[in-house]
Length: 230
Image (cartoon, rainbow, N blue to C red; front, side, top):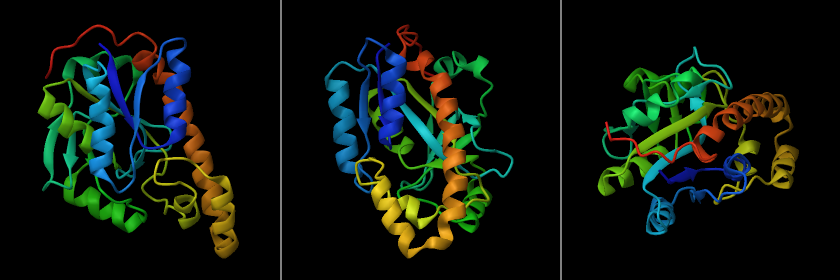
C-alpha cells in the first residue's frame, strides 16, 4: 500500500518525511478554507500512484477526558460540512495500529476552527465525537468516491478546556506554514494571550511526540501491504 497523506500543517508533513527515511511519502498540505484546492492537491497524489488515503496530524479534543498527546484513530468521521455524513475508516488498517493504544470513536471534521471551550462543548454534545479537525472529511470524501482505504491518525494538541489563542491562529498561513514572527506580532496586540500560547506550545509538543512515534508504521515502509476495506 502506498498512501497519500493529507495534513494541515508543515510540521506534520516533516514528521512523515523523517519517518519515511529514504523513501518519499506522498503528502498534500491542505489549503485552509479552500476545500477545492485541498481536494485537487490530494487527487494529484492519487494520479501519482497513491492507492489509499490517510489524514494525519494534530486535532482538538472535544471529549474532556482526552489530554494533549492522546492518539485518536477514529472508526468514523462526521463530515459537518455535509449534514454530518458519516465516513467510515478502514477496519483492517486501523487494526494494524492496535498496539498503539489509540482512542477510537468518532471524529468531527469542520470547515472552520473550533476555538473556544464553549464551542467544543456544543460540538461534543451534538455529535458525541471525541475530537475535531479540519481535513479528515475532505480526505474521507475522496477516498469514498475513489473506493480507496481511508485512515485517520490524529494526536490531541488543544484539550477541550483550552481556548485557542488568536495569536496562534495568526501564526499559521493558508498553506499550513507556521510563522513565528506573525505570532510574535500578534502577541504585541494581545499580550494577555502569552500564558495560553505557552500552554498550547507544550500541548502541541506532546502531540508532535505522539505523531513521531506512530509515523514510522505509516510512512516507514510498513503500510505497503494492502488492506481490505471495512
